[in-house]
Length: 208
Picture 1: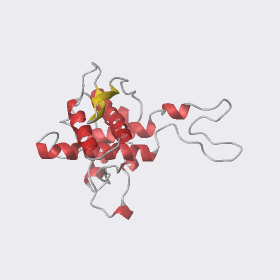
Picture 2: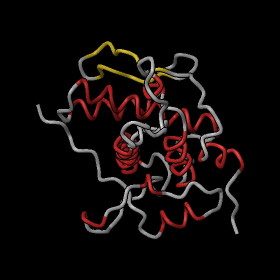
Picture 3: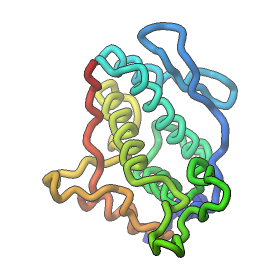
């Protein structure tokens, strides 16, 4: 049985902090209003090519910026695992999903004085507060962008042969988000993905 590498398991369980390196910075041309740079401040060309295509395809500036942050987070996962963007597999997707589910979301920690910690239960109302991790909608959006990134590059012979974020053939009502991946350290994550574990739909181009 193929065992999940230790560092992948640590990311899946949220025990590792992603390196706070790289950034989304303003571009200098209308066709690329935002770009992503690495730890050395160098532009990540495959991301720029994709974001430029999105912009020329009628995506708004805000959409391109949002895509940039999703792809920066994806690259931070790859940098932490020391995996090149062209060598990724579903194992890295599982690591991203697990980390987003369990890592601390800084926005959830910005609470008013006297409010209850993220993930706790309000004793007055009995209702749980938002958990410390990222919302399912955020995770799904990140996966959609990563899927679209690799779908864009595949016809040019760039990236892995198989998209690391699979696209399920199941009908839409039966789609299940990849956020439901088990966060155990076993190899079940990859097997579930291969068995039609749902992937996101391709990113839609924003309308003006």
